[in-house]
Length: 317
Image (cartoon, rainbow, N blue to C red):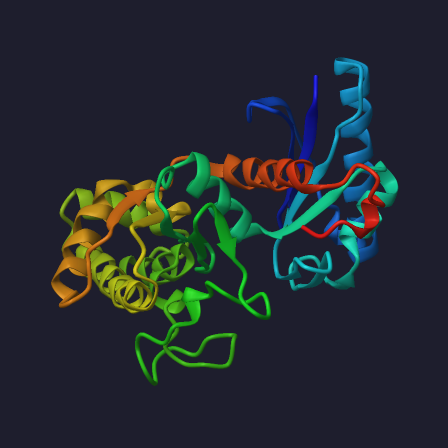
């Protein structure tokens, strides 16, 4: 059975799968990154994990994977296959595509984690059928993936979609990026957790607790939540003014609040638009499998476009 290897690398853990031609997840596995042992150990762990997946494919399906896709965090040079920088993993300028291609002997595609997850949501998830979409996961920070006709736009320098660093509150809370008042300092899951912990006096309280308190009518929680929703709406309206997406897909931990988030968010965005066309605002559909599924799509795209005589290490994602 023809299949590909899909790897989704996070700060502390990795999710992986063997993906069939029909997109089915044939086999799933997880592994710690081993980042406590340093960046070189993380790279070696990724290579060993991929080799084990290849061996599993041979043993189970009688043939090795035909290609591999890997999604990583941080700054990614998709064109040259370089993992440029990841603060949580401590690496700089890792030629990850070439290293994996050498270890596996097949074409490899390297992608940014959010853009890769957005690719999956756009093609087979909540954005399926939309020619233009914007995927915004609300997690520790806020990023974005700009979908255009079945692909995700990386930008001239690989920074497209960084909606979390739109300034929505000029002169506001300092952001590690160097600006003040960035969207992710007000509307990410971590920002809501911080604000709710301060408001309720419980340092262990988080965004999920805030959402539950909102649902029960707690006025302090409603205030904290609405401030985050208003900031998010301000950032999203800026983005949709520039990009004019048909579908706006919201994912990440904060989206797990369901209609507690989506009802006020749709209302807040609707109040802010004037001439702009209001996109459909929908929850992400693929959850934590989006990265793996997207990496699988990157790998399958390589098979659709690669000359079989090409040196795997020279293949461009």
